[in-house]
Image (cartoon, rainbow, N blue to C red; front, side, top):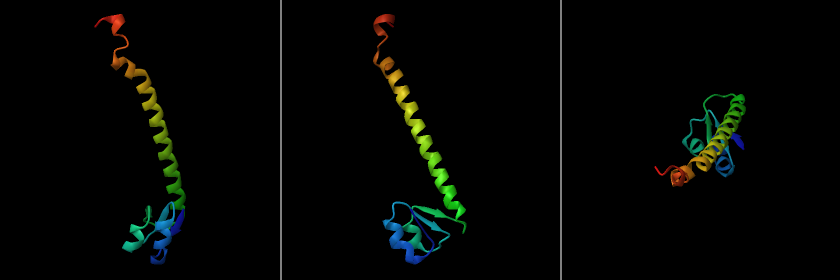
Length: 87
């Protein structure tokens, strides 16, 4: 992760895994960043990290629920209970 705020940071921001720009109005810097923070506070970088961790946890939880749902109900959709119910 690289945090920058000026035009000279654009090459580094584009090469970084995660580029964060703090309150920049320059198009080149904004286009090469992954996250754009609107305030001049470094605490917003910490908040962005927290939000991304919470988002990733929600994605993992959704994958778990989708897997469980498919494991339980795809056999029902395939007609596993048809021989028993004849419906």
